[in-house]
Image 1: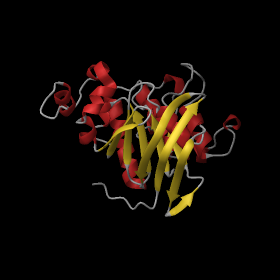
Image 2 (image 1 turned 120 degrees about the vertical axis):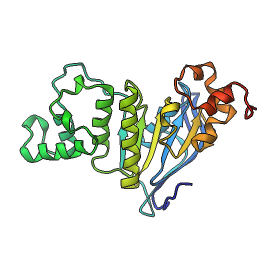
Image 3 (image 1 turned 90 degrees about the horizontal axis):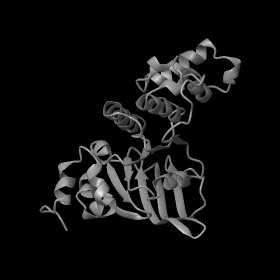
Image 4 (image 1 turned 90 degrees about the vertical axis):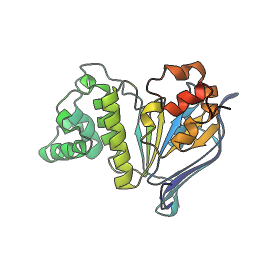
Length: 262
């Protein structure tokens, strides 16, 4: 069991999101404590990204979302966000230094980056094993490199809640493992809440404290072992589940109708 102070938390109660007559999320309940990494998994169209956008205040909703920061209810928690991808053309003239500088200083980047800002940029990037990327063009980065740079920006300043939307997209296994280790280290060091949306069932298995299976509503919730052993996982993902490489044996046994099968 993860020990958390519960002085900082995010609570979602009976959350419903509609676009016209289309119900995207229905009566979702979720509680994320400080120092906790929660992985949200589900098929395409399950409402995962909509959940993050709603937490950021970008979507109208019914229900209740509350944030507690330092033991007090807060209407304006600091939220860090890493998107699935950054749309920049390969070879675009925006450097990593330019991008990070825009987050650490109010001085317009077009006016030039002074020495103290460059030092701050390198300091921020070093926390994410990315200081060697400072002179690279953003459009030339690999998927894993870009995600670490975006994570550095999302953590500047340190947020109360960190939202990660499909960080596995376009990242190789080595880069992804490093990304997950960094995220887990962040929540331990800064005691922040982390919600990680992903299709990467195999990758997050060892790095999240709780897993939520979402398909417009919460279908299953618990430890990674509990959710992956739940027959509802196979029902929700169907045949697509077996295209995921390196699945934990607990899922494979469930799919084969093993001892734990319903």
